Length: 134
Image 1: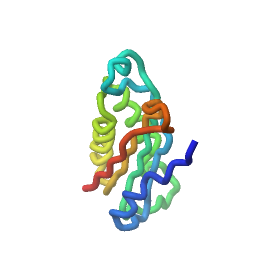
Image 2: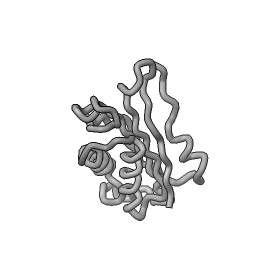
Image 3: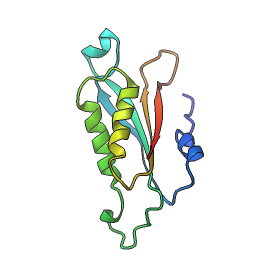
Image 4: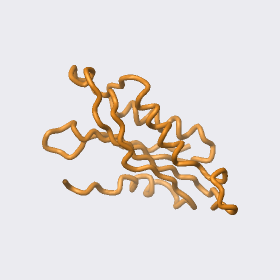
């Protein structure tokens, strides 16, 4: 398997270097996704990667979780969104996750990648990456 390039280069190129980024990479979810008839019949693995540009959010001073954004919550919400209902397009799912991310006013921009490792016989994966900012 070819090693994937860093997926968040696009976010880094288009925004100033923030003080902090929070990320979730390689979140594997069994989702009902796709446009083909067989994709409606069963779930398939997707891989979700998210990077959040937290702008100038200060580094936690008291070493407490409430001083930052819990990446566990980000991962859980992304999985919940992926499992809500059948989605035809990876673009739709990525947009829904990005929309949720940007509901947090601390997040200045986000990059969301959805990969389908079983989509193409001769490729490691296929999918989409979107970048959204305020």
